[in-house]
Image (cartoon, rainbow, N blue to C red; front, side, top):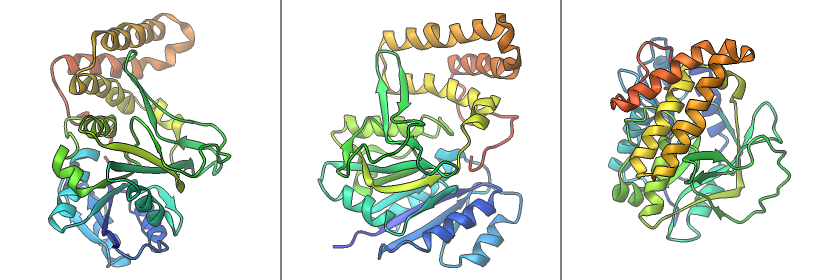
Length: 309
């Protein structure tokens, strides 16, 4: 039986990338899928442009920027209400192969315990370089890292699906019954670490999270730009603490995160001349730690938004 897939794209003032992704989706050969574009409160002509060029796509208007979590949850609820078997979260700055959906669904169908599936994700600007081959959590250190980040991709992970601790929300296939069982994305995160926490929730409920090397996509991401952004640094800093709280991490993870990572970084950025250019990131980090301590979650108010959140 062919499973029906709801593909969810977020758009925020970025119709150029969204249109390119929709063009890539038009080449997909999987026989049963529906594309839902969630517009996260764009103030440009995104909605009209997308509807004019891709009338087959359903466009949901959020009305405001709900972040990666809130925007995707809007699409996920639509998928559940319309009886989709799977939902596929897909970043709007990705490029696909025609067999991508076929391969990722096939991996999910290999075992009833498989709940969440990711492809191999490569850099669009460096097509043979890995961005993500899944993710690994170091529970002692309280950290989550991409597997294979920046390594050359030579087919080293074989072809069979393999288990990982988490996958990125860039390309995230999940079964509808699993969503009903464990709930949707935690909207406190807004963006970053929400995918990691969702995977932990699924694994603790007895489900498997896997990567299938037979499915591949290319991601138009700039690690340098992300590293330089105070907004990204704020959200990654704060949300790591929210992640530790949400999953009930132990004292060793908290100690390493707050002292081994955060305190050491702040001291280095404050006293070493070579890091004087990190003034904005240092302020963002301090604010993130204070906000986490006071339970202030959601968007980073007063900063520019990202591509979809």
